[in-house]
Amino acid sequence: MMSKRFQFLAICIFIFLVVALSVFLLRGTGEPARAQTAGTQAQAEGEEPGSASDPVLTRASLEQCLESLTAGPQRELEALQDRLDRVEKGIRAVQDLLKASFPDLRGHRAEQAVNFLRARGIIGGYPDGRFHPNDPVSRAALAVMLARAKNLSPVPATALFKDVAPGHWAAGAIGAVKGAGYLHGYPDGRFRPDQAVTRAEAAAVLRSAFPVQVKAPAVKFRDLEGHWAAGDIELLAAAGIVEGFADGTFRPDQAMSRADVAMALARILQQ
Image (cartoon, rainbow, N blue to C red; front, top):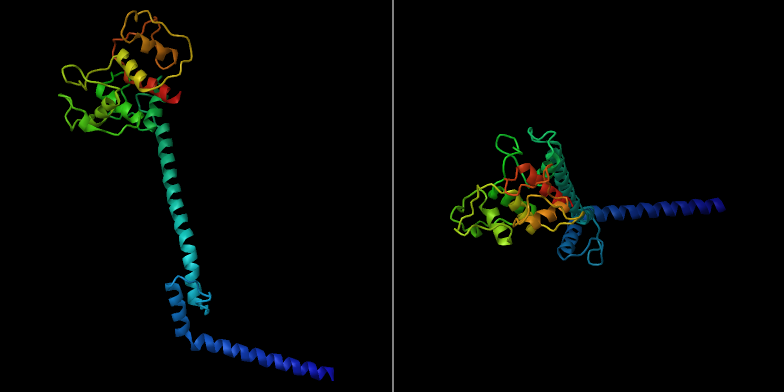
């Protein structure tokens, strides 16, 4: 008796499942246009498929919903990857610059200082691929170094000097440092961009452009008595920025070499 009831119940369940599956298949194949239209309309109105306003959840609407949900994160991931690629490229460029020295600077006392400034785009070499560390620094070259080290925007229009044309290679930097008060012209209205900078002038300019941290008592040089730049030179020497010579002199009126300017500027930026 019980086995017949179970058989009957099993048959009923089987019939019910067959009918339900048939209805589901008929709805899925017989009404695609209505389902697609409902899904499209709901999306046009900003509603998600399967919501109260879009009760029919089709495969197409589900794929569109998933695509819209993943589109934003995908774009963010692509943008992040692009930024990471650019950062990696920049790091490699800096590493290459730090490893590479000018051929005439290998083993030179200013090699590390020049490489430090070169990696930051503050200083460069000559067209022949060399640095020429013993050459004097011109006023134009010092203006360019200062402008780059201080992140000053080029201002060619401010370089209103008789001997600095708007097209001069250093006009923008000269205008920038003049506007900042670091370098000035002469009473005759000239800047003299190609004139060599003396050791005293370089010390005075660096002292006015950068704060320094004094690390030792004031240094006295025997050839600075009454010199107009004695205070700036002694302060920079006490801060370890500039050095004198073995004979106890500073030689303030001697032209400052590119190596010495690079070493002083690197020390200031690294203090």
